[in-house]
Image (cartoon, rainbow, N blue to C red; front, top):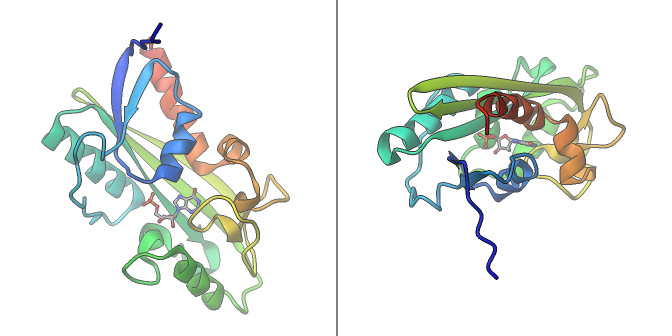
Length: 201
Ligand code: IMP
């Protein structure tokens, strides 16, 4: 017999980044149906014109709610490096210019930090949730060190040069599950989930 799932809620996750979708699906209860931007036919580029990570998260969730009517959450993440005055920050995806390229971004960070002794930095994720007429923001931060060269084959973005302080491995050496347990996005998602659970889902 076909297994028919009845969902208590549908939420659009305003991304087409399959890595992020895989990460969050390990978190979200099966009673919540997650749709991506592709799933709802949203193929246009949502311009991230905000000056901060939280502004960009809000822009994406608002775009979906206003144009497609779905309850939605979106995340925006930045790597904030102390000796670079918080860069790449809001420019994390396009730090080395467009088209975006993770390897070029990493190369630029490592070049700028070549002689730096202070290697500390943090990932910050902001999740913007729009549920009917309510807007909520959830933040997750993980502090760590920027390595001198990439290590590890997993993950994405800057994962291979970021070693969280709570681990002796880079994010790129951890499994998705291990990364979720300590990551910026994992922390912000747990806050989102706690909020949704209190709504009795
Ligand atoms: P986004 O705007 O949230 O997609 O994130 C901006 C950029 O930050 C991405 O293009 C990635 O390069 C980087 N990034 C986001 N999340 C992560 C992560 O979990 N690990 C490593 N890099 C990330």
